Length: 270
Image (cartoon, rainbow, N blue to C red; front, side, top):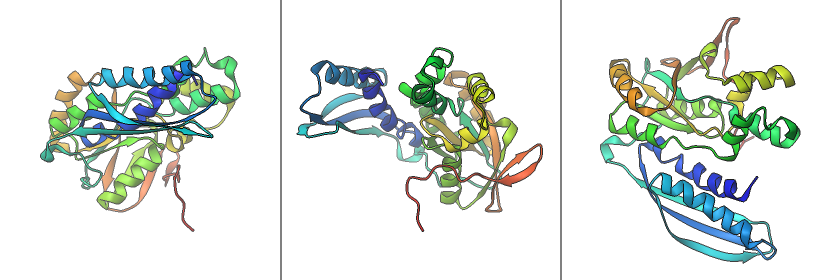
């Protein structure tokens, strides 16, 4: 991973949490734990990547800390933003009947990582996926429009895979969610990779992270608001399911209905 991409990723994964709540990025704190052997050019690349992304989203690097460590390199970022209290997007606002949407496509970053780890010769063929992994783009504009126009009833960024995001939103809102397998947005590159290498592209979308898209819900009466926002959002949006009164989390497909895959979990109990 190039140093510039390391800095970009370090900030992007933090910025992504702000539009997921409808907040506009404002200030960034950066703390670095630097090994003795780290080259100055590497450090410059990391900082340049972070600052370039911050400037694109009008966030200011206002401070932080630098200290020495025997290793490894550690980068700690805190990103802050602002949002009007009545426009905050939460995970707990879903009601039965709300429609479930997601921005962009899913699984691209996972394929990009696999290219870098397993088949570097394929990096050119799947360059779009490699770029999605190296330099994820937080959906800042999309989140701000969803919040300011009171379009979304809930929102969360898809950092650890679709299954994790769906499960967390459903749990916070005490609802079930039924997804349509055929509607999960997958890029041509992701489909092609799985045709060549095997595996299930849909399972990759459910279980793999680093896409940093937005999962959000919209009440049926607010579809008009969503249509208006989509004209200026510049980001593809796909309806992938609906919230239900039953607490079940399911995926509907051509062969029937199955339980939502477990997906990725940071912390497992039991």
